[in-house]
Figure 1 (cartoon, rainbow, N blue to C red):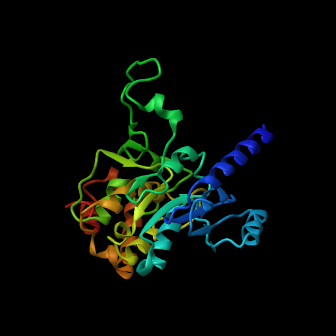
Figure 2 (figure 1 turned 180 degrees about the horizontal axis):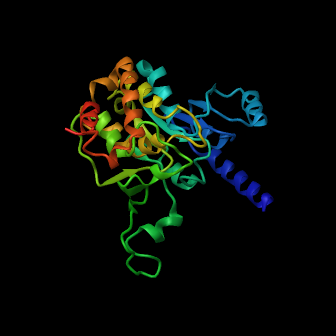
Figure 3 (figure 1 turned 30 degrees about the vertical axis):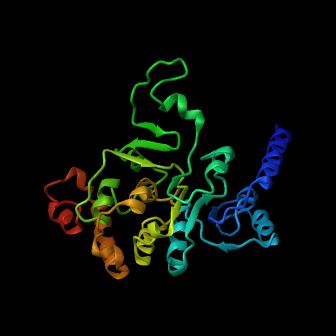
Length: 298
């Protein structure tokens, strides 16, 4: 089994070496992998590495790759946002937001090789094993029952906005009970969608102007919602922001002032924690003033 897997990897590497290198910049969040398959497809890249396997870390540095060692927050979005803030004034024109283990987990190499040269906003997601489940008809041409998740097209995952993941004991929440409250905290008078369209795994191709729709402080502030600890897993807020990424990169809505002010933002966080503590959803009258103060209701 292992030998067969090694052969498959070797064959993919041969194919990759025949592919033209893209001038799109690859920003790769990495955890315990050697992502040479990705690096061989681009002319320039940066590896944000949070590996805890010392053998892997040693090998990566011995390869003289472009690496920045970063804290392991349990997910990849903090690496993206840190890069945006740190390189804001000289961002590459087109950035591929990738994970070291993306190939085989969130999309196939065949799919990625067809889109990695794209210059427009692209969802890097392709899991054909779910087509039978999430398409309108299954392999027997029988119509599927519409559930909480489905595919809008082959690489666009659509999920009902019910914040199912906030109940997970593995991903505790500290600031927001659900993604609706987070949207209201970020944006002024936002439209709350019934469904989210996003790329599971948070891998995309984005343009510089999409990133620069928001300030450096905006990205630093959002990271504060996602890097407060692994207890036992990454925060629920990271799951919430994962679903908001297409909105962040494309929405015309105005953000609240505190999103662009780190001091004002940090002053808001204790109020958000208090809101979580008292579980407002079970005490709507008692905490109406608090929700208004947070901008969660009008």
